[in-house]
Length: 431
Image (tube, rainbow, N blue to C red; front, side, top):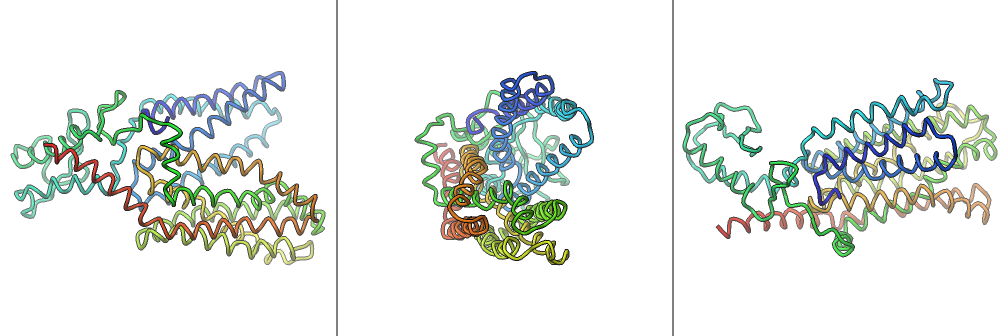
């Protein structure tokens, strides 16, 4: 749906469904009712992610998308933390569901007032085409600050502050430039006026099918990004489900010590997500292969401190050393989280990014369920410690697949921009 319809009402409806499920949880009397309410919330959470990243791709250029993905991931973590604080501070388990759902319902209504950004507006090909039209008029290059107008309904707005405003200027050259950009945005077959918004955008994909989705998987960087997410389910499943008990039973830590390790690991995760966004932002400016490089290296190196955490740390370990090992491991293994979303966005056309992000989310969600199950199988086959060491191979495989993205990401991004250039120039050739 994110690839075929206006995303503002879609996101509003998605949030509304989840918050209604959350609110109704406070009033359930039976387990089936509780189950149904939690299913609604799960549908909302899973459905929101593709919409979010599809919209963000049209709000921010390629070199900023890793940082924005880090902000979204950090915000999600903060929200979970705040929810846990609220739940732990109240005696009635039903009340927290009411407290957190009401602001969400209000926000879902406010989302209806937000305009869906034009698809592809921040793509290099789109900006190049707009600048070509401006630069074609030599009368605007004599030292003047050039306005870059954007069509919004029947009004022209400048993207930058300058001395000449095309909304009021009597300059013939300025009006000509506006008309040319308006023609590109309004008349091209690939730029479509949606019913929901008067603004023009890259045409949404109205033919969403299994075949068109399979075409997305033919992009090497997309396929590798999806595949690298799967092996990490093993070690992450261990961390989420078994690490606390393992530290208490096998490493003879107290409950407080084991909980402290988990909290430190979580703090490292928060730092790692932010660091991943920063690394993605600056490395992309130097080389588009930078983000997948940091994805692969961080996952592989992250296995080293985690190995020591599982095999050497015990109740007699120095607190400082244990904390350092834990936080370093927590940082390294989540650096890829914002990077994979930015890579996925950059190698897909604007009208297919919703499905691409949905595929990664599906693999992540399946991993959350299958990861602990697979670790359980390993535990029944080997002893716990051996099973956990084997699970670390998942991060190594994921790291190698991430490094393989470096072989294709440059060409895949260029292919996207070239396709958009062909679409945009096709209109001019027909005039």
